[in-house]
Amino acid sequence: MSVQRESYGFVHADKSRLKEVYGGPTGQVFVECTRLKPDTPSKTAILFSHPIGGGAFLPLVNALARAGRHVVYCNPRYRGNDTALIMEKCLLDLGACIADMKQRFGCEKIVLGGWSGGGSLSLFYQEQAERPSITHTPAGDEVDIKGAGLIPADAVLLLAAHISRSVTMTEWLDPSVSDETRPFERDVALNIYDPACPAQPPYSAEFVARFRAAQIARNRRITAWAKQTLADLKAKGDPDAERCFVVQGTMCDVRWLDPAQDPSDRTPGTCYLGDPRIANDGPVGLGRFTTLRSWLSQWSYDESQAHGLKNAANISVPLLALNNTADLACTPSHARRMFDATASKDKTLVQIEGADHYYTSRKDLLPKAVATLEAWLGDRGF
Image 1 (cartoon, helix red, strand yellow):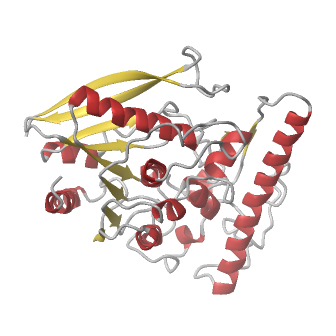
Image 2 (image 1 turned 90 degrees about the vertical axis):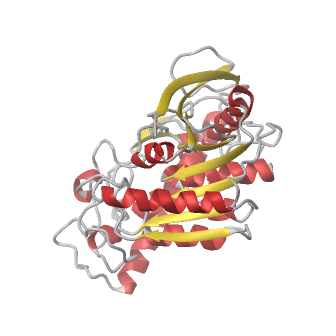
């Protein structure tokens, strides 16, 4: 099927005192989108988004368009850079995109396509569209989600998705770092990348429990420091002041070395960024560069309001969770936990056996995923 690809953008108002994106006028935000338009007309569109965007050429996005689905990929204001990302503001951009789609293209039904990190964003958005409550970010800055008039979507797709950036960060945080000022002085007893570590795969249940507890403890130490630093800045009469910092050791998970942890068809000893030992301190590791406010909004285990399980418990629309069993980034327990937490009475969990995160290793499985989505959407009149 012939598919027309077009780029477009729109501007919407932003009342924030603080600006976290480079360039552009104060008081406005530009949102960049890509539309994939098949020959067949439709009043339904699948809207994909991700906190840092960049997925308009994903295999699944393109395959859905070739199957006749009208697709829009929305890049929030933080396109390609999550250093200062505020999750609550991603909701405002996504909500503005839905309103624009309805006016610009006449879309009557919107299905949120939550691929990877877009899954928890979709759940966060849908919760706040159905039950708006947020008036401030975790840092205490005003952000009027409650009064934004977010338009609820008609369904949610969780596609190779994880629970949230905050939970994922915590499950990947290197627990052997006990002092953030000396991040390379690591506790060998918890350093799974150190050959001298006494624990070796397959890991005992006792070690995994200690490992996970230490990950949460480290996240909470960084969170406490971020909150205290912000409080100190505000106490000095500078409420809008910000601080940037580096977090080392953010790609460390027992699942990558021990296939018995959260078992699936994935290849042990690797992660979606390649060698996890290298990615752990490499420049593209999760949350490597961040700010006080951004940490609290997107990475903090306790403070982030974008939490897939909590958000899923407050949505009512139909939901499909699709898990790729060879996924190196989003493991089966994430899909299962989100599915179980979803309040919707119409929910479905499907396994695509052998598929990887991007459908690059097993391109032959992409048609199966598309057929699954097509059948599910068709059965519900989308």
